[in-house]
Amino acid sequence: MKGTDDMEPSTQRRYDIDALRVIALALLIIYHIFVAYQPFASAIQFIQYDQLLTEYWFVAELFNIWRIPVLFLISGIAVGFILRRRTVKEVLADRMMRLVPPLVFGSLVFCPAYVALQAVYLGKAPTFEPTPGHLWFVWNLVTYAILLRPLILYLKRRPDNFMVRVLRATFPFGLLIVLPLPLMLETVLSEPWEFAFFPVRFWYGLLCYAVGFLLVSVGDKFWSSLTQVCHIALPLALLLYLGRLGYLDWEALQANHWITAFESGMWMLAFLGYGALFLNRPTKVFGYLNKAVFPIYVIHMVVQQGVALVIFPWGLAPSVTFFLHVAFSLALCCLLYEFVIRRARWLYPVMGLKAAKAAIAEASPSKKLSRLGRGLTLFVLSPLVVVAQLGFLLAIAAGHFVGEMNPNSDPSDSLWSAAKNNDVRNLAKFLEKEKAPLDQLEPSIKLSALHLAALNGSTEAVEALIEAGAEVNLRTEDQSTALSHAALMGHSEVVALLLKGQAEVNPVNVYQSTPLDNTYAPWEIVLHVSGLLKLKVQREKWEKGRVEARKLLLQKGGKHRRELP
View: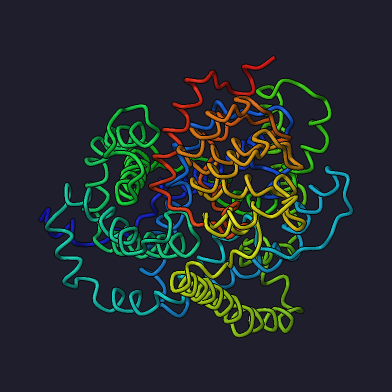
């Protein structure tokens, strides 16, 4: 019967999942190269090109909210497939052996290498800085596999459980709610933490991983449902994307966490659905790339930075340079995989590759060494990786709690801290003193009182400093002004005050960005700045504020860097 067929999970390989994993990681590699042409690249240790492509950032914003979550979703689906022919213990051991060695090796070799290459480009002495870097999501996958073991065991032992039966009853159109609903609840419950803030991103990814595993447990009805709802999900995702970027004048679509989460879910359903429609067949290309894409992802940041060192001095147009950057980086990565990684079996463990059985048999003299490596990975490195991440999450949570309990823990003991805290009473005391260092830069962070007030949105302090004669066009070491800072952080009221105070409308900083360019900066750089300076920032307020700041700048003749002579 049809109903029985739908209930039985198919054991046939899903070639579309292999293909979509390749496409998702390839898009992520191209995205990273594109970041090198954005004003925040240097701040996150990418080699940044002098000529930017900020006008095309809207393309990156289309992918930003689902490019990583979809990898977690696909990973959960893949684990569900593997579990049909293997035990839970075998699956977890396989995950640890495939993920932990590349994570540890990459954090000690490849990630420090690309940071060192940036230092070389900037003319600085390279240093060794172990970091997971672009492999952070692999770290998450290791932790997810351990944390979700109870769920995996339950679904393995009770494949036709109550949850699965309910899901089948609601499909196909229930899928439009089943995927985004837990993501929406997560963003609501995580307030006031931000959508892209690490703890939120961690739990968001965990839900995607768990939902992926649960959905594939539904059986063939899940896949048939995907091919139906994708036609609804795609237009919904496009509508919400246009609203999020302000192309549609509908405030409800902008700066709302749970709507952003719903949009993220729609993009993932569309991605999976059209993949099921068009990619579920074996091809030699995807068969080869399915094995190659993860090792290529592991090495791509070093290759990307190395290519930048060579081609950036050529000084070509940014669009041409970007095209060459992508072409050379992908070509070199593929060559390294084919002629080095694929042929050097000793690299397989640290590249996430699984050796063929024949190769394992040939390597029988080193079985003791292999068992030692397996034991080290499963019983030492894997627990350390999980404990380290959970400890990191707890530390962030503790710091956040302390910050919420003591919002004014930074005392107003100087002109700079009073300006930052919007403490007008103490600010007035400092201003009354003779020869107050009104435009002096704070020694450690090299910012003036007006810069700090603008960054933190301290409107009353900005007004008081301007009235006291602060230089509104004073530049920092990176040639940013208070207007540049206020625009970046979405403080539209501060932007209005500075423009009224005769601030220069189009100053260009060393990142080749004007204040108008800064209103298009991604949330990630805002989080980076707020973290460095301990600023309070909320995404919804920032989204609305930067739209208003953009309007104010345009009214005063604000321009993008590319529009200036």
